[in-house]
Picture 1 (cartoon, rainbow, N blue to C red):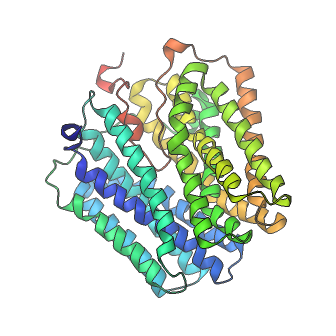
Picture 2 (cartoon, rainbow, N blue to C red; picture 1 turned 120 degrees about the horizontal axis):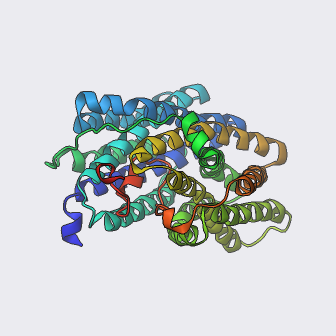
Length: 415
């Protein structure tokens, strides 16, 4: 295992530290805004700004990498991410923080693209599966640890934001000091969102629906937890449990998706999302034990995170392998567009129905997406088993992680 990890260890170490600081900063931003008395709708707008910047980053980052190389692009974007955290110390307000979050989202899109494309170039067909598992494990564990570590800091001061900036800056060191050969930026056949929609409407709608659901749950859950009276420790545990759901569930969902089909798996997962979200909305009258809430959050986090990789897998079932990179980029753009609206819409629902309105929002949009899945299931038959591509449990921050799957046919070998 050490020999397998050695070519990419600095990259995985760097991205793990970065994601720890990223999760810490995201949670600290929401908690400090709430502590200052900012309304949930304004907090939703600030959190949505991150995905606006992320979308812009997805559109322009490849051009930047081609111009200055991976290592220089990573240095510039990592510095930008650090500066945005420090700017949040200097300038407080919903507008200034929204600008900071948009700039940070742009940097985040670039950093993850650089790291993942580099990992892809440094792995072989024989090791990609193991590297992918390690990468995803490190990703989710780092995010969970970042959220839990908020308990060691006082929210009232600026130290919490300074610490986030320091962690993000430290994450640059393993990568900037590495002597690993930089990857070449290869071209791929373009595929617009409209062209992809003609091939697979469900993939486009599913990715957009995932953007409406998952980021809203991830960014507004701390506001819900504070709104119902949880302590800081409970807030961090609840958000961390929501994050750990994908880590524990996605691999089982992948097996299910490969066995029973994408639309059947999507229908099952969406039914669970709707049921669990509706239960969370209804249970607030009963005031369930915190452990019960953690168990429900674990299931909700895992099932909601399965929508995006299932949408990618469904698109790949319909496409030749040389279109995979372009298709995954288009689907990520769809996800980002949904994510720009998701936190703001969820915050609006929370303003109307109280903190538990977050789960009413999740149940409502989950129901709409389930209806579309059932409709597409009716008008187009399922892809036969032998024509399916492998399910890859990616996170929506990734542009190239789907390429790490060892069962993918390389473009130069495609029929």
